[in-house]
Picture 1 (cartoon, rainbow, N blue to C red):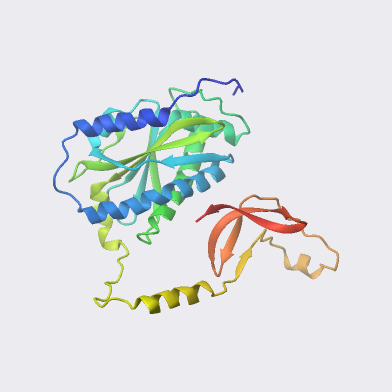
Picture 2: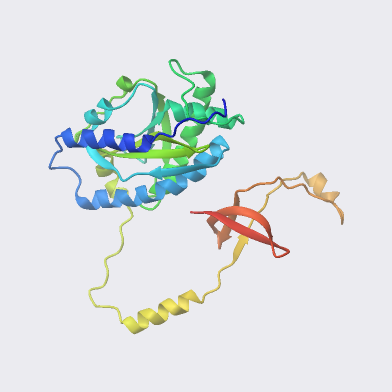
Length: 307
């Protein structure tokens, strides 16, 4: 890759315009899942920016910024009609739902991920077309693992079923969905890499899939009809805020043979690999990720990402 600067485009805006155009021409059914299901899916969308940034940054070993737009409701045929040829399509499965989650990955982002993974610098241009290269196929599998982890984290707010990766398609005509409701929710996702913004992905959730997963969604208990005493509620909130929680971070978890442990002596040094992805643990749960540094002569923890 070269380091030459190119004029900055606005691919995210273009992607949104394509989807908006498709929505304006689609004949949406009046039936389908009610507003509660769609509202529940919005909770998943709100988490996608952060979890995809975390997992994809780790996969390609490069700092990125991720922005997931609010989903647009349109028919599956209208979505495929605005797709370009230089993309790959990843198929994921959520729980027991037969209707998959599809993720379109732009070829530009795929080739940029390959270059960044091997230490290159993305210059904003597409460097690969036609048949997929072996390095791109390997990167598809890496990206799929990161996307699956991100989707699982986002969906964990609603259900405990993990998202698993099935396969990929290089030709959009190979995608076949047997849908009772032809409408889907599409979230255009932009990624900023090496100072360049890419219309990197579309995340497609079928309405059939939402209906299928609905029995597994976590449902809140019904609130008592009687109004809660506001003074008692305020007192409880203040008391809870004063509770101390154990907070710790773990730099490394090295493993050693028993014979090595038996030879340890005072003054021995155990090597610890440097990392900028140290977990901050509250109780038994990972609360955030960050890096270890120094402040005012002491060791400090800098938060980079809340989970």
